[in-house]
Length: 409
Picture (cartoon, helix red, strand yellow):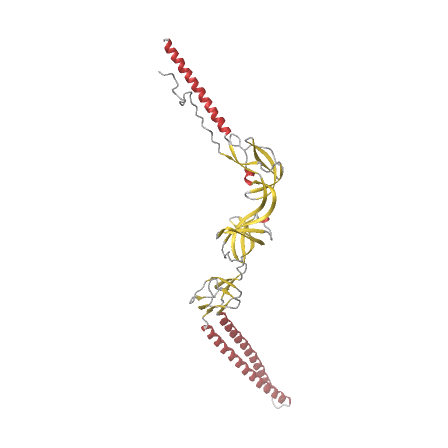
């Protein structure tokens, strides 16, 4: 082996050693860069107003809604009201064909008159029987007639008296049937029971309505559309935050940019359970002077449970943040007393724990009641995905370093 070959081999070994050292340096720089580039999403603590709220949804309906039906069957002959018709109490809004009911009235009237005539006849018969009985009563005293003859006429008088009672009962029965027939005839004329507006009509002219087991509905009338109410459902975990007299705000899909307000007038005690979820009905009364709100609209309701003014506020998401170790486990920072919460602030690029006591809050913001936290402090909300910077090393000539650094052959 000559000297040239030995020299060339040593040069190759030196080149390989340099490549290994360079690779280690690049890897260390990448790891160091990844550690330095770990970042967090933060938001500053601020002062302002906050409200503790409960969200729900419900249906808008008039405060007073009257369903107008009919207790008699028949064919709808005429309609005098339609959707959105303004009606007054006692106003005729529909007419059922009264022909058959008029006939029943005349028939029952004839039965009533006949029963009265039979009563009068029974009274005449009773008067004659009583006169005969009294005459025989005087004759039996002086022995002109036998006692058995007197008994016969006394029995006839008693029978005539009973016949009068039966005839009087028939008169009462016939009069009841006559009155019922007249009432049914009156029922064929449908009138509005209240002042209001027709919001529903479910019959047409010529349609037959049948009142057998239940009263068929013809119209639905809202007494006053300027006063509406929302029947909202509130979960059992939130119902304790809602109280009668409390304020509520809501929106509807028809006016997404408009916020309406109302007052809680009733928190009902009756629970509704669906799929093991317990809810309660809360009634919210709403003024509707411009009639924007329509019956049946869905309202997204926010109940204001409590409010604070000019307090220190942090994002609610900060209460859920926990820094993690390199293996992804949460860092333990010690136990807390009752009512205390731990948040993390950003100091010198690293998360530092701060213990606070919270007040009221909602899904977005929470009040800081006490603790070593000042306005403007950056609070960590979450860790952002770290992306290590790829370091590219070049030789003095500007060519990318890599395999093949041996001397030219």
